[in-house]
Image (cartoon, rainbow, N blue to C red; front, side, top):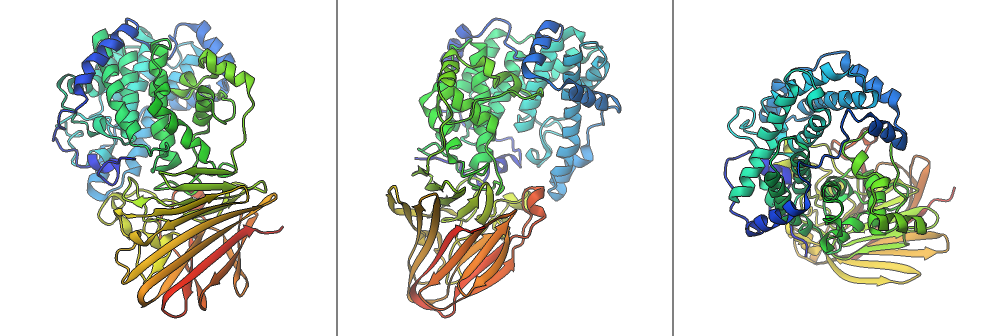
Length: 636
């Protein structure tokens, strides 16, 4: 069974940044043996992934193999040269602790760190020393910043004010980037940049982690978590430990050994079928960093240690790539945007590594750290290269069923696809949406789940479900007796039946436990039936309910598209030149009410559209009844 952190969102746990230390983990006794094993496998003196700056032959070969767009890389470097690095934006940092805004600091500080990478990349490809002075200045400035953590992860300003040093999503990866740059450029850097940069990575990343690993007091909560923070931060810490010059070999082995033990907690957080309830975007972030961590260790140990081959890693590696609906559309679960995408480069890489349907991996014409080195097809193991050469990519199947996650996906040759989702309302980044669904054509989401909204301080507070995009009102689910779904793990869908045949897939869910406040609700079931007819398919969603006494009942359709009433019981929903037809049937007379939903959706594309809710309401209270919708591809 899947297991989840007890907090609503992993980020919430660190907002207060308290100084309470975690209990000594049960796995701690495994850390020392793991470190000893890693000491025998890791090379002496570290294992950076970026070639030495002065090895011009290596960089010229890298540029040719990756077909680098050197003109663009140099233009970015010259733009960075055109103005000095901005000072640390402390006022923006304090925004989050005073008004909940995290975006302004992240934008301004992100630009400062972006300057570091652009200057380094430009110097790597040109190799004439033109960018070295500015690169050194940037390293010294960043090394002197009061903190490298994000403001949203330092709500009480303990890091900013120097009361403690924690490691977060940003600082761990800043440390890895800085360590690789320092290792590559070395003494070619001017002034005190090299020494100050090394000291900063030690103080902000390696020393705090080594103290945890030696004492077993893992006071960075993510080290003992199954959330994405675990592999993200561990990837940065391990990458920094392997790359940073001057680190003792025993310390490197201790960091990697500790990560080897504790990152398994992350893998235990997946459903039994490999799905992550936080969705494809978070999978790309979390499992993507696990893959980066695994590949970094595989490179360092010359293939003798391969964490992607762990049995508990295979299902998480495969489940999300197999849930693509159609086009480039994926299930928009939890806080994902409706157009969320799994990382295509990652899915292709994993397909090649592990042998499941995916496109052959390719390289980009950019130096994207660290993927340019870790997900380079030239570095695939020999067995994976041979397998890739011998087989053609396979099409996704007409059906994908993830029983533990309660996700059913159907695909038709005419480009229509749907995703039905059960689940529960007690998961990280939860929406109250048991029984939600999405219908799409050729990658365009036409009907159903609207996705998440931009994060604010409210998002991770007691007022989270004030949002219509997060509570059940803004989802295509029933509203029995005017009740909305409850939050928490007890508000869960139960699979009553599945029936999968060549002609039809059917899934029946019990949704009654999601509505504990609905007075007198006896039963509430939702049945999805996906009927295949040649090249086409039709989806029927039928709700059946029963109360102890007559009550109001409605179900809803939600959409970003334009809705046209085409008949007494028919609608057409269209978006971006694609359309579906909807036929509504009920056990009693009904009415249709359309309204605009409130919310702050993710992504510029969706901010330009209007989210709509179409309530299908029985005209009179009823003790029992049905409401069904049938969705088909609109004829052009």
